[in-house]
Image (cartoon, rainbow, N blue to C red; front, side, top):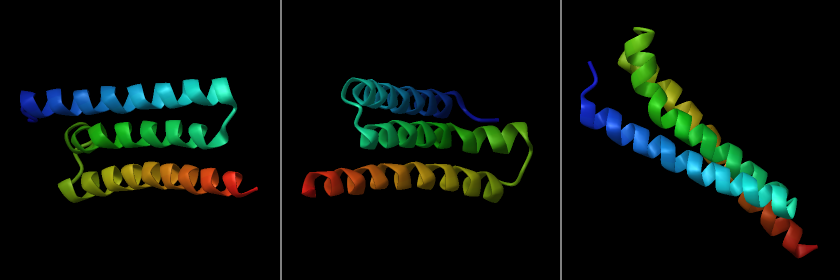
Length: 95
C-alpha cells in the first residue's frame, strides 16, 4: 500500500505539471507557436509519468522494476518533447 503523504505529493506534482501544460497550451493558441505546443505535451507526459509508477505497481501488480521503467520512459519522452521545443525555438530565431 502506498502511504498518504506520497499520494499527496504525487498529486501536487501532477497538478503543477498539468498547470504548466495548460498555460503552455494557452500560449500556443494565442501565439500559434509550435514550440509551446511541444512544451505543453511534454509536461503532460511528465505529469502522467510522475504518478504512473505507483499505479502500475499497485493496480497492475507488476514488479517495482517494471513500474520504474514505465515511469522513466514517460518522463524521458516528456523531457525530449521539451528539448525539441527549445531546439525548434532557437532554429526559428535564426531565420
